[in-house]
Length: 78
Image 1 (tube, rainbow, N blue to C red):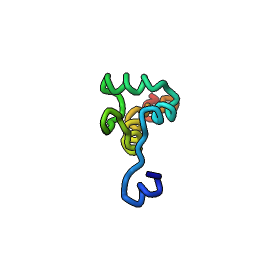
Image 2: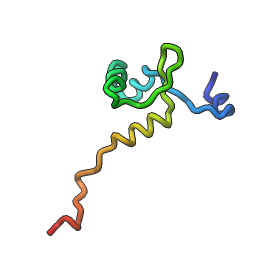
Image 3: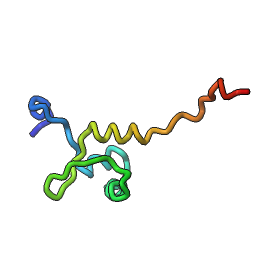
Image 4: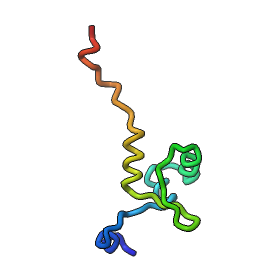
């Protein structure tokens, strides 16, 4: 199925483990390791394979976001 047809069916795009690893610039094994440690994105098991909804990946990445420490809080200055 192509993504245009999937969107017509109301289906969200999904990524394979390899596609997610490529997008993040890491080895595929890193994705498996993160999931084993309970720190990876939630996935959907399809047979023996895992698929990742794009929205789940975005939510997972947002949760990893670190605050910008270069900005100094004016109220903290004494």
